[in-house]
Image (cartoon, rainbow, N blue to C red):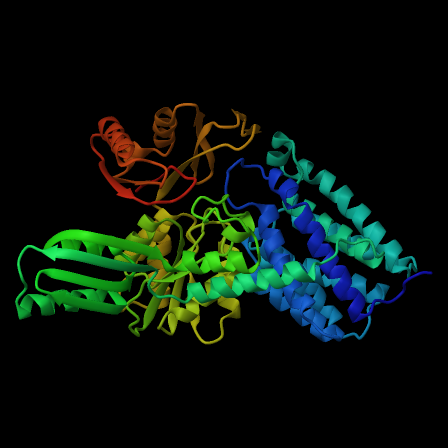
Length: 570
């Protein structure tokens, strides 16, 4: 029997099946990415985006069409990660704009929704490119319109034809984007959209992957724990016992107590003769320890990551690992767990006229941004794209009516723009920085007292003078711009693509610097990652100094994962 209309309950079932189908194929979609970089990928970004909406849909009880549409639109908009996730959320937003005005959906409404979805997604992209998910979405809307025009009313037949049309468009994407053809892949975002459509059809047919209630509840528990942990202003609980070189007088004791109160909270401090015991929550245990060493020798030091402790409780709650491995040596967290991006308040909590949010990763980078006056750090920029909701939450924390947001990754700019549009209580100014080095320069360029327009103009002008190179490794064999890349090769990636590839990291860095035209720069800043020793980093610094004697070379610890070095020349 033909299905000619869809009820809200059917739409919920079909959407959840689409979400699960995408989740099941996310690894394959990740592998379609042109750049073989080991960081946040299209499949993961799209999956996290649709799962954000799926959780809201799953929670609905006896919904009408408006409830369903609101859950899909709001959940995907706030959960959107990466450009592909933002575009997917805009497709959902466009479709639901049409669907929410109907109690049931027939072929004509579905076609109108698909057309609105495509229109909304194209408008969301500043410079739309064919050969992407947009091309596949357009083929879907055109096929839906064609079905209605010929009088087709069976929705199962229509969905089957939409999928067929989407696959034809997907197969043609390499002809529209030469970089896809060279790499021998189709567009990953388009492939993700095809997966969603296939899941939606399977859901209608009663064949879709079940959306597990148990798994969903477990995710909610884990998320609740994570959200609670993110609220902490100070990350590390630090306890210190020490022996003073000499007994303190009242003035010295007052000075040390004032210092401890200034760098943390929940402070406890006792002194008996030359024995001191103190505990506090702080973002910089090292700084507290350094201060303590000026007065004597340490007897015992305990530093606990408060968020990690909560995370462990969350893992136990969902029974992710029942083993006593004691989780310090447990298997690495899954990509989904890693995607629970952290929003870190590094401000002094003081109200002001203008605030700043930087998207970054790495404890060293956090300290650098903190020293520049940034209020909130959203972790996960390059290695796991933060969601629109993460950025919104960061904006809400800042105690200022005007908040500047620095995405520091071209794949985060759209999510930041989306957050700016959703934010109601604050004026959000997105400065479209594409690297953390541009974010640092933009922050330095800020002028207190200047207008928003003046500051943004200055920042945009200054970041144009920043050339960035990033050194990482390849996760697979591929070819880009005529360069053969093999799994395990070091890669030097510049602002516009691959600059160097090789087996020797020093040689890769030298070639990358040459192609960045470093000899014309005044300053080169080298930020080394968490997997690089200080000695090795100093050797790279010396190498750069010897090659470019007229350039000032600076070295700093960034602590970023995956990227061994991030280097700027300006």
